Length: 319
Image 1 (cartoon, rainbow, N blue to C red):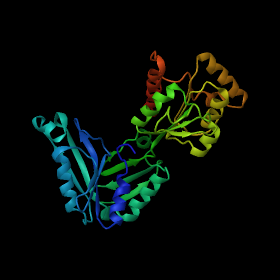
Image 2: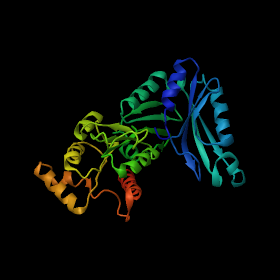
Image 3: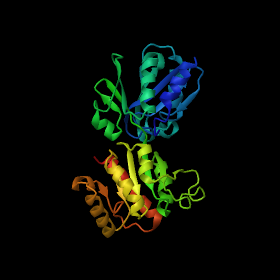
Image 4: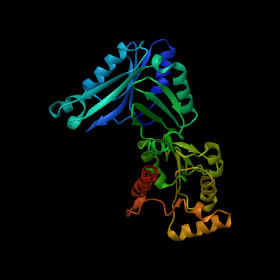
């Protein structure tokens, strides 16, 4: 799950197992900090640790502080600043500084943490908000901080730290073609849960896509089962209207943040005509990125996959 990985889930498990658990979260950074705001480390009372807030002695100091606070009823803010000549030794290059909020599960509340974990399991966007001065805490939905949720941007709002917990990003690739062989691993490297859809067993063979999640359903059935949402992008690559069009129609009726379709301008024009004949409006059809990918002069499957991944990123981040 990106920087968050499964830190809240692990903290809840350790707490319920009687080990005690403390969550350490980066709440502010200045300069060149190696981990972004929202990055987490979880520490048990026995000194077990998972995740990361920085590196070097900063990490060590956080762990020691967390172990002493396992039973504390309130959280505590730690601030680390490092001069340039010490920077590389502790992982804060170029004199970076960070603030880390240390919070035992007993202070956060088991019920509140369980609520957050449940929201994450159900792919519901949630933000954990804690006033670092008063200790007031609540979990809110995406309506409370729409811009922060859209940008995946945790941060301070006056004395309140707003920790964004978005569902993992997903990419649905329709068509087990050569471009997909390059695109699937790129998507995973960019922290997407990627799934490949192709009802043709010879195309989606394990040998061609080792370790990938492959669905041999028809694309419309696959999308119905997956349930595309605002954290999902869809890329169609088959060139075959019998396979691409059902997926496109499902995607256009959903909240996907990106829909890209392979094909020349002529192919796309025919696609648009079919969709309009099927009753889709000009605005709906206008959501399609076709031909798919940024126009960077890409040649060959690898470069085309790069252009697709770049355009997906642009659609997600440049809003």
